[in-house]
Length: 456
Ligand SMILES: Cc1ncc(COP(=O)(O)O)c(C=O)c1O
Image 1 (tube, rainbow, N blue to C red):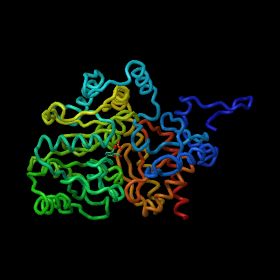
Image 2 (cartoon, helix red, strand yellow):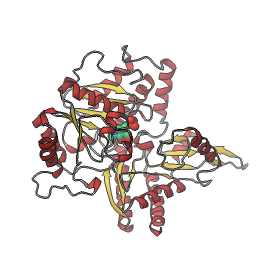
Image 3 (spheres, rainbow, N blue to C red):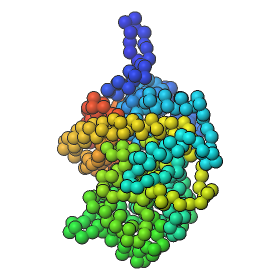
Image 4 (tube, protein in one colour):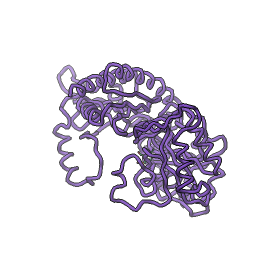
């Protein structure tokens, strides 16, 4: 059990502080244990079968980067609930902010009234937005709603209908977002017709889908040439394109970083044709790559940045943050009942303070230790074909999908919560306060599970 044994032999439950201090996974009952099995049986009966569960993990409590399942097993969280639990699980400052807010005001719609904490969050986002000028923000309940808001705003302010997205991208599952999503066909299968006016281009140097679109001569990326020579010439006139929506680092598509120089070419193309550049930082933002926004690594400014996931440590919140001069739409053009609800806003304020105050630096420092350790694993395991990333957004790529799958599942049995992305990559995306001692333990267990996966 997740417990310590006292001198009298009685088992005591770990406190939340003790849980956060745990360095190593601790498996006491092979997961899924008997209590987990009961939940799985009920879940299999009553929940939507569309939910893509990776493995039978049943979280009960979480503190820092450690999660306890129903049967008392302790796991190290290497995916932070898909890059959501940026400050770790139930960070005391976030919990305190939520509790304080819930005791005062749970809800009043910011669309219809002047909810003070809503504009407090927008002012905080203005401070951290990756623009040289001022920003305004529209708050949502999720990442996909931030994407939808950006689709609407860009059409509205440009008077143009078409939008370009990128192969390998994931932007969410509502209709506009899922039309832009191009990471797996299953997200669109049987749901057509999709939103009209959406086109796609290859991302970066094409590595996410096995093409070589690099720029060996330094005369321009083939993926950018595709937009000019194929899309603009044969499919859609550039003066009818409202925006390009791009993840600075593709998340679901495989933790793919674009090569240096690519974003400059993309920005230049947008500028040439009056097209808005929208950075979807729902997964890559909020300090995950060691900067508040991943696009800051690439030296260009977007016109709009989208946030979600890590922005409120797990409370439902997203944001469309735009250059202030762009947010030029009429009263009533867009709104939301719950978007920017007080408890989510309170969590966001505490989260942004923590990320800026200490966690981004920790993410960079421990991220470097993880990268070095993973590169060592790559040098001794032939099945590991690439290690890439910055801070806490690292991709560990395997030779085959089945190998990645075997590592993910074996990790679970040994107390590591891993999650695949792309065709054959595991994302290493722990909470931003993941510690060095936990990194050492995670690397050791990874070494063991990769060794097993290589034996078959
Ligand atoms: C880059 C990106 N955009 C948008 C989304 C959609 O966010 P949500 O699931 O909160 O709607 C995701 C979710 O994984 C994402 O990774």
